[in-house]
Length: 279
DNA sequence: CATATGTCCTGAGAGC
DNA sequence: TGCTCTCAGGACATAT
Image (tube, rainbow, N blue to C red; front, side, top):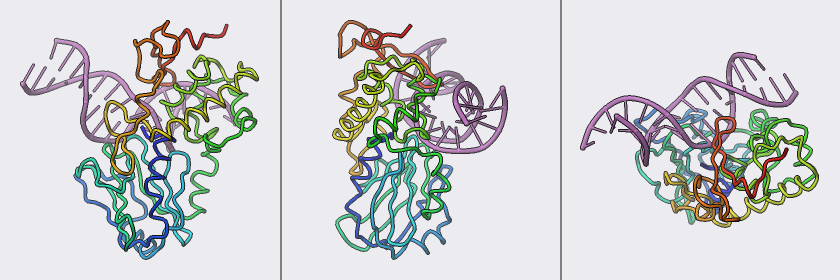
């Protein structure tokens, strides 16, 4: 599902629209219950058509197209949303389209099979009101001291705490398991039981795994949903150490089979040999 | 305040 | 074979 590496890949894929002018906005009629688009089409067009794209940014797991005015077009893919410049995987779940006057890329599409995502036109102020308090520092750039400060007093298991976007923005269920395996930390370890070298290791693994996954353009899981902006599958699923590998031999030690447990209603994968439980 | 749980949604895959 | 059921996990509302 789109986590930081997947959303960053989408962001990079549509980045060439910077400098291009929006010609038209379309909300694509869809048989399904429509995804959230705010404001309505009339207002959306009034504020966005004719505007030039100033930048393409990312806020946690959201893609943000910043316009020369104060407005931003914010895509929140949630589970199955894709931001594309190529034709989408199917016409069926197309939701939204931006047309450009000229330039290398003629369109940006928003496609969303399950429709839990959204497309919103927001001012900087609206974004700050919506997410200023809810979205923490970006997981790719957060420094060790800040990372630790934001998590170390929690009594929650480290795997669960890593998913808290208020503490740290961008980590989702897949990469939380992956990075704890690299750091050799048992996912159930309470944050407040972790020591200096643990925090250093987790922080290093956080950055290392996310950067590696960005280089591979994210993970396309067995359902095949995730695609980059060109509708191509990612490559990082071939490098997963534990995620979705329950029962398979650990790639790191070859001594144990990967285990699957449930934490906070989410699947967690780990190797008991590489990530021993603390007593 | 911190933490836990239920909800939205579709389609793949399991099981009968 | 075709039906029904469960599950996947983003963010957020509500409950404890």
